[in-house]
Image (cartoon, rainbow over the protein chains, first blue to last red):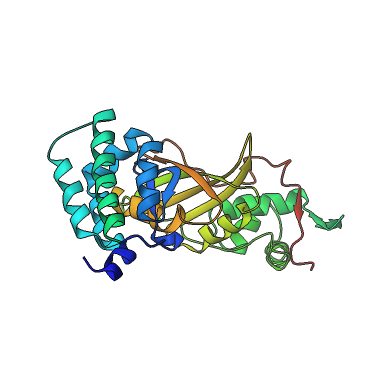
Length: 109
Length: 173
């Protein structure tokens, strides 16, 4: 992957492009992530209900693909949806998937 | 109608006229005068004065959206904000056509309470996620969707006449 592309994926976004964590329709937790790194950190901080809410709606995939522009990670996150994980197990799988991709990108970069 | 400390004092005739208008704003001056036992010219003068002073703000139409076939959902958002940014958040919310009412409230924290309308749950969420949560100063949001309406009454002279005896004179600026 080209350095230019990696640096684009790892960039810090404008506030309005950030990912806003909700626990259900209209219920915003107050947590947001405006970069790949921040998104990775927030996975461990937010209520697991929020992770369940967004994963099964496809929100993570959409934001990662369309805003972060990382198609590879979007695909990997999408695969987790079919596994029907929940609670701490789900958190762990999402976190591991994102961390793995982050170290891959950081190494290349 | 008398002025006192930058307020307009309404007498019982004014209040009775307002009450009559709130019951039916389309009735004629003559009909109001007849029902209140006063001359239609008095009704006309009082109404014109109250319009000039901004006590009567507008004459509008109340539509039953359900009967009109609208299937929208209504929700109440409670927005917890940074006190320094609260007014700006409230003003920004007022600009959105989806927002029907906006209030601020000071309880333990500074809150903004807003009534919002949306086509469905998804568009409600999309609006809050893309237009409300990103506003600087928004700390968190709680949203309750209204499932059934038991009562809706517009604020009326009849509800609390004492509170409305003195109304801030806005047009006297």
